[in-house]
Image 1 (cartoon, rainbow, N blue to C red):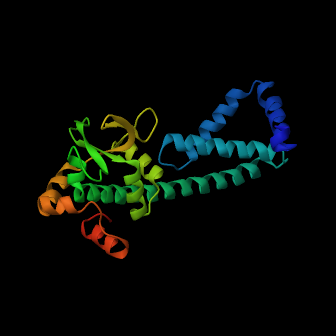
Image 2 (image 1 turned 30 degrees about the horizontal axis):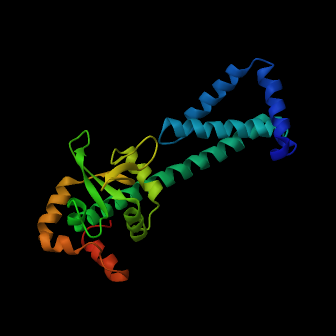
Image 3 (image 1 turned 60 degrees about the horizontal axis):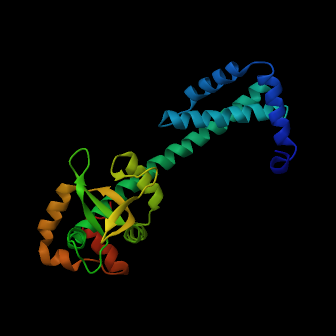
Length: 237
């Protein structure tokens, strides 16, 4: 603590030990955390508990180390905590919106390149449709990491952020904490994003495209023309 936090770190820990451990007031500390959790306006209980932990730590640091009066310290810490919660909610909404657009763009890409995804051998293989279904009977496509990077660049989204949101919705199948899973490709095990397919959309777009167009569109083109074509396919919202 002295190495990384100077004088304040050790002083804070010693004060906590004196005020709550030696005085056997840990239950009081837990109750304060519980009450603060109920005041945090967040989307999940986990977020509320984390925000309450930050607020409680702020209150304790202000009073035990900085010597602030408790009511003033609590008001300032609560204000900071509520601002934190508002920022988390805003980021969550933006991530959900981005995830919707990213999923839509990904489905458009898979539909446009269906031949390359569905055939056992392809000149340029961006991924593959797996021989499995999810719990709801929907198909699953494995999208190689390089392909997903290309889609992410096109859609200007953060892959990890978007895949985490989609995984929470059951649209991405994780493997032991990883956002990717290992799939077998020509005897090799490679990691890929395993995304649940919008089967109805795949069928509709493949029917509209026809086999020849589906075989040609391994890429959308480049630059402005590429973005325009992706938008016409319904890839962006």
